Length: 297
Ligand SMILES: Nc1nc(=O)c2c([nH]1)NC[C@@H]1CN(c3ccc(C(=O)N[C@@H](CCC(=O)O)C(=O)O)cc3)C=[N+]21
Image 1 (cartoon, protein in one colour):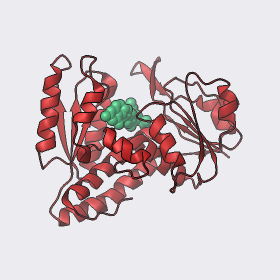
Image 2: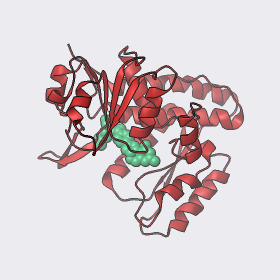
Image 3: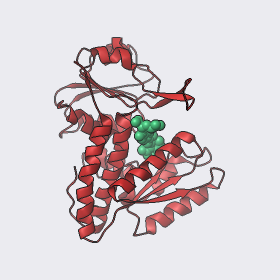
Image 4: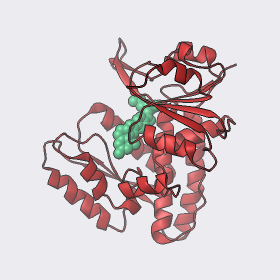
């Protein structure tokens, strides 16, 4: 039987555990706070940011919500980041991506204090991850490690295939999968839009991470019997529903679940875990900034 990996439930258990860590910080006089900066009117971005703020409220993290007009000068965003960097009451900073075209995203990521970079996107944090000394693991790949662990799958010695090479998912995912540590030690292949014979590669995977951002590109025929399938895609496609769209993954769920050993649904798979690991990094950041030891889930 195919196991459906319940991302909502795993995320909930991480949030429950984080409450204990947050209580411990409170005993030491610190309350974690996360600033989210949104410079966009994209409805999907607005949804994600408001979900993050609700999550913060649930576990007792202070959520600071900053909106910047997408037409404003880039300087306004940099000034905001500078203020947040300097504010000792702010432990984590997240600038929701994408930012408008007239703002250079690389420069934005560099502007954030690496100690407050709870996305793990600053080059210092990327470098540490690659060097096997991660400070803040990027939320989506970290959440995926937790999901794989939650179904009792050991990555060690297995063939892992990552489809997609983005800076925020594909690359850090591959780095975590090859690292000499729990959740790693996998023989890892990274595929992308130029890969020849993609199906041959994906069929060989014991663990398949689909993160290309292409709706339903991986179907059951591209998946090996019993594989653990992680679907990172959250694609809004037009549909005759109340909202006018539906969410589909990068995996064609119906055919994939016939062959997979375990599979994540969309929604309710990777998405909630990305948010849970953001809270995790914010709690970790608070401990690091105040030299308080915190147990993390
Ligand atoms: N600096 C930055 N950090 C990010 O982590 C970041 C970002 N920018 N830009 C956009 C992407 C996307 N992302 C999602 C997180 C959670 C869900 C999520 O919880 N999705 C729900 C459904 C949401 C819905 O109903 O639309 C689910 O899959 O069940 C989705 C998408 C974080 N991102």
